[in-house]
Length: 86
Image (cartoon, rainbow, N blue to C red; front, top):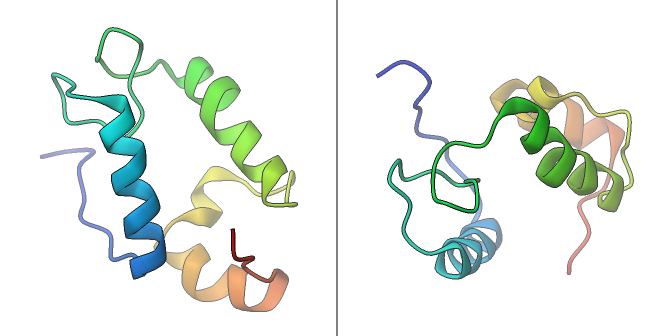
């Protein structure tokens, strides 16, 4: 289906993602980031509520969304930043 993909992640991220999903509760679209009523977030709400705070907390406010995808994980992160333990 368009817009859906499987992305390999490290175990530490899988644990944090599971905690997030447990707190989020069920959604009607199985979204990782969902609106308060369990539907897809609008793009502007996603950037405001999820993406911008995440990249600022990571210390990389300049990071663009697609740089965090598969290419970014293999090329950007090893050379541009250190992943910190939480």
